[in-house]
Image (cartoon, rainbow, N blue to C red; front, top):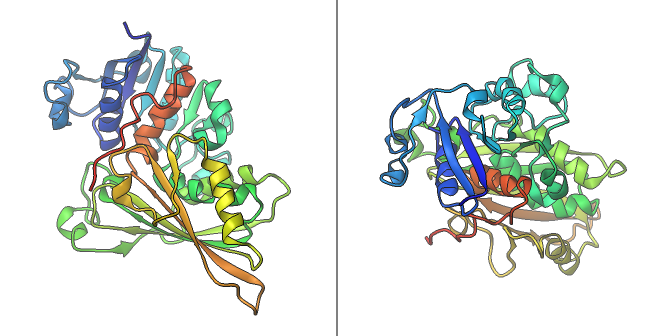
Amino acid sequence: MKRFKAAVIGGSGYGGAELIRRLLIHPEVDLVRVASVDFVGQPLAAAHPNLTGRTPLRFEDLAPGAASAGCDIALLGLPHKISAHKVPEVLAAGARVVDMSGDFRLRDAAAYQKYYGATHPHPELLGTVVYGLPELNRDAIRSARAVASPGCFATTIELGLLPLAKAGLLRGPIHVLGITGSSGSGVVPTVGTHHPVRAVNLKSYKALEHQHTPEIEQTLQQAAGPDAPAFELRFVPVSAPLSRGILATIFVEVPAAQSMLATGELFRHAYANEPFVRFVEDRVPEVAAVSGSNFAEVGFTLGEPNANNGTRTLAVHAATDNLIKGGAGQAIQNMNLMLGLPETMSLEDPGPWP
């Protein structure tokens, strides 16, 4: 008999599909309820055909408090600006929460209003919900009542830069080009995400104003510490013709004396004991190597010293599956930590190749 009970609230989207899939194969957590305003009364396979015959559960139109009643934990796959209203209801029902939206990632209500376009309904909770990046906040996640799982771009870029932040090597402008697959745009197609346009196209969007920017800066400043040099993220995301995956290329100016050996040691030390981050040295990180899995890959290329300014360019490469390590898989990883379970449970599969 499984030890814990879980509910998924907002289970008809792509993130919900991955949450449900991972929970159905979980050895210690029983998925007992899936709430959604779509597909009400229909089997889960109506939205997620890969689950045909896998579970008798059906989508239920339930308020978050009712959906999480009797559960140890609720995992929320609700949209931004909706989740902010629902998390307190789940906590009041006695369940712990993993929220996949951006509604509780930021500590600053003004930054939330700027990047999400709404006044936060519960600003008193900002800064009290633990940011769910296990590689940085593992101990805090274990004891948390509520966790805000990071965004997909944020996870990828943060994992690429955490070793440098901790070493005090982030300063000035940090330039990032992040390429993402279409599943990050959600189930409902729009003019910019519809397959006939997406499949033959590359285009940037939300250049220098993506909502994950303050989240990344906040997290890396935390990792660097209060006395670290100031830096600014200049991030341009790019829409790519693939379903899953993110590849981030990050440009950091480091001192000319920074060596390959010393840089490699920063990454090896940071990720030697991390179950889901691979530091790769014999090739460049790539999407196909992590797609379908909860693994992230990071690596780097170090340019030649510039005699004119005493620096050299460090290009950091990072790849994730936006729906798994960048989304629902990381939410399950956080859930495992919160329930005192091995954090790798139901997440250890390496994914397909190619």
